[in-house]
Amino acid sequence: MPTYAAGHCQLLRMIAASAGALALAGTPALAATSYTCSNAELLRVACADAACEVMDEAILTVAIDGYDRFTVCGEALCWGGPGTRQVSGAYEIVTGVGLKSEMGDGGAPNDAVLAFDPKTGMGTILAPPFYSPIQCLVHPGE
Image 1: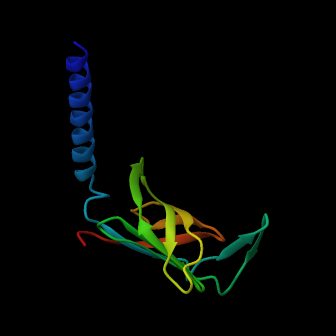
Image 2: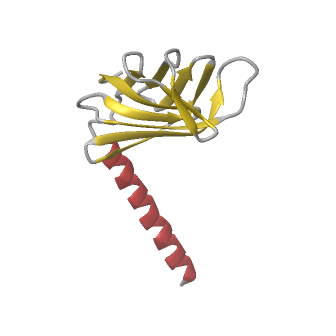
């Protein structure tokens, strides 16, 4: 009997995972949509040691492609890697954990989170040392 129970639980997990994947694939905000984001026209903020300051030169660019590659670049720093996307109400949230440095000597991995409204493009990026409002452009089907 334990074999049947273990097999039954595994089958239920596979069905649940398939249903979840189908639900996400059918979500318009996530289906093969790419975004490019920047704070070039907005307030730019950088923080260190619990102190933040407005910086004219701290322009960030963020890209999320239709295959969930998440790239965050600012000043002489750039990180990239897989992003996890989800929709929560009217907002899309993209997180990247342990994004790898794509510039210079490699540098330390970084975590980042982008939360934005796909309808207006307005959002916030948290990618230490950058904490900034950001505006995203949608590129459906890319």
